[in-house]
Every structure is written in structure tokens, then in C-alpha cells.
Amino acid sequence: MIEKIRKIVQCRWGMFGVVLLFNIAYFALMSVVLPLQYEENDDVMMCMIANGTYSGTPDYHLVYINVLYGRALVWLYGLTNSIEWYTLTFTILHILSMSIIVCSLLRTENRTRWEKALWLLALYVIWARIIVALQFTTTAGLTCLAGCILLLRGTPRAQWSGAALVIIAALIRFVAAGLVGLLMVPIILYRLGLQWRQWRKYVPIVVMLGLVVTCRMVNSQTYNADPEWRAYREYNLLRAQLNDNPNAYTREVQSHLPEGIDLIDYALLLRFIPDPEQIDLKAIRQLSATVGSVPFSKQILNVRRLMKYVVELSILSIILAMMILTTGNKRKYVFLLLYSLFVAILIVHVSLDGFLKNRVFLCMVLPILVTYYMLLPNTTGKRRKYALCAAMMMLSGWYVWQTAQTAESKDYVRYQWQRLQQPILKQYVPDSAYVVTLGTYMSMEAANPWRVWDYPFRKYVLGWMTWIPFNTTVASSYRGLLRDDMYIFTTVEYNRERTAIPRIREQIEKHYGVPTRVRPICHNGRYALIQLKVAEQPVANKNKNKRRSK
Image 1 (tube, one colour):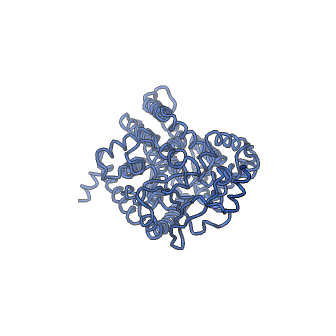
Image 2 (tube, one colour):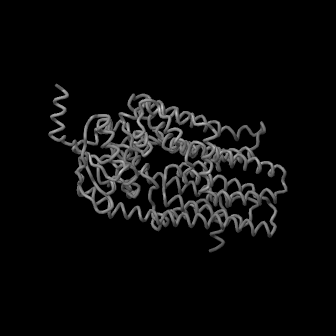
Image 3 (cartoon, helix red, strand yellow):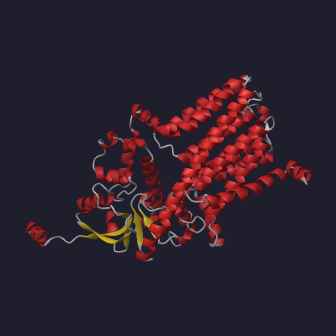
């Protein structure tokens, strides 16, 4: 029996089949135990657009995902809407990509069993961390890594398959795929070489890059064909750059705002709830230019934010140092030094004008680990073996702890969503009403990823949905919040000074001359549902206004 299994594993497709079945079981187990949940509400919103929950019909304008991938999802939802294709396609890509990565590691020659076991353990632990907070960025990163590994194989079939995976990854999240691709370029060049005789191996790569550029152009042309979508696309890109840029939160920028932009309006923009009429496309262009003018001497201070990754970076540096000190190959020695410098420059560059989020950092850790594995020295000394085992076990242990912490926080978020938030929404919000959440109070990401269409209400405005054509007739300014069918989901402390509601009311009266009042709908001690209404002016004030008009 054992011999039969060994023969199956040793055949061409046998190992891949066994690994694929194992990964299906592993993903299913992690999805139940952790369980599977989206990391943030971005994926929930894009899923709602794709399946038609948001606008009434499936739509391919997924904002952060290429329209070609969106059209494929619309076609799938057209076949049957009883399957949540957005989640299912991500699941398939996860399992397929991880199977390719694992098989590549197992088939690597000149690697001992303990080395393979250490790297597989780390990869599966990190994969569990990704599953517990599923996200389109990490999905694109994992898919691109699998594609790059196939490109390294050198055989035409593997390379064309790898090119297809990289293209799919670029459709899902171009930035994540580009980051993983950049980190894999050095090892691809190192392995394939730059000799003219090897030019055939680069044909799939060149074709792949051409198709990625073409897909980007198709995406741009699709949005540019409609003036509303073109304006929204530019607005949202600039808004995202501001919200994700630590320089935008500095006093230097806030004290030099462009003329005509109110400080409170800017503060509300940074809290993801801008007034579409006050912070319009022109204003956000000016703000983007202001933030972009922050000197390098100020930007470099953002590197200190990398301290939250000090454990991971320290362990990776220890592994790299051991590899450099034990390698006897001068070519590998120089490559490792240059690669470490390249990675350091890339990490610092990302942190200069952006928050290096954990999902992005995970996309960086995976290709770094794969590169380390491919360049492990062939010497097997006991000290190096024990030190390497200790470092890799520390890395795996750290991500086990991080996965447990993330799963615990997700359990709490899911509890809030199911026990505290959904009952309010289902009981007090009519089916035809609109709901806006200020900030990240509403745990939309806790919705069932396999049944996003069960979302308890129709609409969601503001946030990165500001200026989107779906909502231009709903809330083109803060005055839209005064509609009779508009409900605001917030915390019970909504009247506290310097919170969102008092500031929004202040800005409505300042910009539009409309005094407002708060109409409480309900609360449960933690969250509240309210409406903003036009406040009736006192009789004395009305008489004063009449006299002034005379």
C-alpha cells in the first residue's frame, strides 16, 4: 500500500493531486475553525456590486478590481446567483496557488527533509493567517507568487500557466501583484540567466507583461468612456492616497490647507466621511498636491512605523545573515547582499508615503521566504541546522500567535455584528431606506462571505463610495443625510464633542445655512441608529430673520 502511494506521488501529476486534495481539506478546515471571514468591508462592498445586491443588477465596476475580472464575475452571476462567485473564485485561486507553491518546494533538489518541513510549516501557518482575514490584496499576492514560481520552471507549459496566473493576480490587485513580482524578479533573473541562448524562456514573460499593460489600458478606457465613472475613478484614487498617507495627518499639512478648504471638512475627509460637495474633485486635487509637497526630511520619519514589524523583520534578517555567513558560493553571496539591500529599500520606499498594512507586508514575506529557500546553502553543519530551525520555528510560532489573535478579534467583531448590529438594522431600517455608517463602526466584514446577498439593507454611502455614480442622486452632499429615508449607524456616544455627528451638523449649518437636530431611532447601549432632521428655528430667531430681510 505504501509503495503504491509512493509511486502515485512520484508520477508527474500524482504529487500535485495529493497536495491539491490536502489543501482543499486544509482550507475547508481553517474556514470552519477560524472561521473564514473578510478582513475589511472593501471586499463585502465589491462583492455586493458584483452580485447585484448594491445596485439591483450585477455590475462589473468593482473599483479596486479590474473590469475584466468584474465582467467575468457578472457572467458567472448571470449563470446562477445561488453561488457567491466572488468568494468562490478567491477560494479556488488560494487552493490552486498554494498547491503550486508547495509542489515546487517539495520537488526542489538539494534540499533536506528538515529544510522542506520548516518552510512548509511556515507557509501553511502564514496561509492560515491569510484565511482568517480573507482579502483581495493577499489573494492577488498569493496568486502572483504561484505564477512567478511556474515562470522559474523554464518549461513552456509551466511558464505559460505561470503567466496566466500573474495576469489574473494583476486583474485582482495590480499593486499587490506588482509588489510580489518585484520581489521575485531578482531570483527569476538569477535562475534563468541573461544569456541570449535563453531568450525563449523570456517569451512568456514578455507576452505576460504586454497583456498586463493591455488589461490596465482596457480598465482605464472603460472608466474613461463614462464621464461620471471617470471623475469618480480619479476622485477615489486621490482620496485613497490621502487616507493611506501618513503625511496627510501631519500638522504641517493641516496648517497649510489650500484656500477655501475648511479644516473640519479636511478632518472629516481623513475619517473617510467627506462632504462630496465641499471636498470635490478640484479640492482633492489641491489637497493631493499639498500632501505631495511634504519634504523628504519629514517623509523619512515615517520609517519608524515599521517598528510594528520588528519581530518579523528581525527573524528574516537572522535567517539571511546565517545564509550569507555559511554560503561558499561567491555568486550567491553577492546576490544575497544585493537582494537584502533591495528588500530594505523597497520596504522603506513603501513606508515613506503610505501605511505599510499587514496584508501588504504578508505579500512581501511570502516571496522573501521562497527566495531564501531557493538560495539555501548546500552545506549542512549542525550549528547552522539548529540555528535555522530555531529561526524558522520562531517565525512560524509568531504567525501562529498572530493568527490566534486575529481569530479572537474576528470572533468579537462577528459577535457585535450578529448580536448587536444586525438586530437594530433589521428591525428599524425599512427595506427601501439608505444607511450610512460613520467611520468603521459597522462590522460589514463579518457578513457571511458565502451569502453576502443576505445583507440586511440596500444601500451604503460615503467612505470610498463617495462620488460613486451609484450614489450621486442619493447623497451628493451632506444635505443628503437629511433625507427622510436616510439612517445613520453610529455609537451611542454620537453627541460627544469632536465626534463625527456634531462636526457634520456644524458643517451643514455653516455651508448650507441649515440648522439640524438629531432624531434618535434606537440604541442598545453600544450602538445607535439616528436620523438628522432640519431643526425648526425659535420664533424669536424667525422674527429677527424677517426684519433683516426687510
